[in-house]
Length: 192
Length: 201
Image: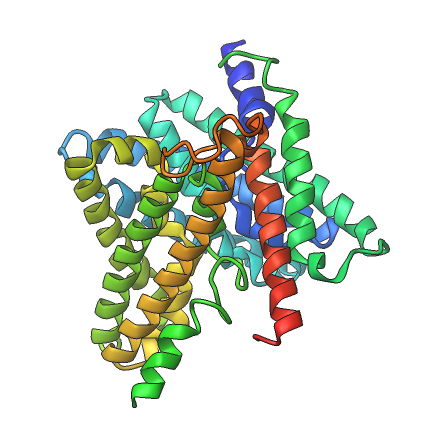
């Protein structure tokens, strides 16, 4: 039960994009089309869940026992970079067509701050191994949800008559603001 | 030669402003700009990391093999971020608490990585320094502008000084996440409009 609450809180109440502002770059830049937004969301969720597991193991079995916590940032970012590389090779082997479709988005997952942010939040709050994995999966799902909603709205926006200075980034940010207001409605849902 | 320096410095402030034009490093921009003092501290911390990393990358650019350059840049950046984090925690514990996890997240600020890849890695150290200085100034300027607007409308204060207290009911929403997106949207539209009507591109 507690794990379900943790998952829901990471997806809805504390959505990484709309309340912590993590992963804004892909959220603004890759939300033009629904299908690419969905593929990116899935790849990010996968990397996030894996990062959650590996970074917890490294933190609790290497950094803390040897008192190397000051290497936390360097260690985590290296974990993320190597995982992204691994996922890239894996997808290329298993499904070349998906690899083609994701293209440049794959390596860019490394600099998605939502992933490093998730690893740091989990280590700060002292989550257990299982909790960390659920948290990572929830954060990835929340990211996918936000980017999908945004892509859906932006596909329709192409037909709208937007004033010249608001074209592109400004109107996207305004939509994100309204989405964030809507997500505030989840705030009272759970107390985690 | 002198003009070259001015160009390297100046482009980061307006034409290639990291926040208003390139839309890079948006996470800290939106997250910490609830008060002007937080915005300024984040701008200065990022400036420290960007300038130091650009200097180092420009110095050792010929020693780094092309295939591992991104990983090397990230390790260099992460080292300076750890330094900045420790300095902040030791000297300004209150600011360090207010910025929280967004200081370590400077590691993945795409602005810093993109300057290493786009400029410092194939320019001399003095030009890399001017470029980093200009980008930092542009970034800090944008953070200050956004946090000034949000603090003034959200609480009626700027830097904690009650400038407009009592003149209007503070707009709570400006302090909340939604206010960050909406005010940045309007600021970018304003910058676009100014660029277009004055021909400052």
